[in-house]
Image (cartoon, rainbow, N blue to C red):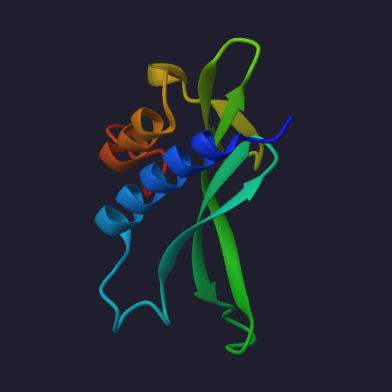
Amino acid sequence: MAFTDIERARNLSALNWFLERRRPPAHIRPQLDIGYVIEAHAVDIVESRPDWRDATAIRQTPVARVRFVRTRKRWCLYWMRQDLKWHLYEPAAFHASLKSALQTVDNDEYACFFG
């Protein structure tokens, strides 16, 4: 089941809050930008950069994944390890809201998301 209209509005508000804090200044965005991709109940935070071989192509690199588990009414936060697989972010894997998970990504206490 997809997000309801109220959930979608709450999620977009949290994502806008995150982007306001994390996006680089406008003059840098053609070279580096932060965005998100929503698929079903997962929100991926991505970095967008021009491809180093073809500057006309944009490459999106995943930074974090937050997945909503409706049966448990909580958000699960994942980070991508060097094996290029998503792993639960053990210091703070479960959150009551998307904004709470995004605050953890923004703080990046252990440099797992933005290095």
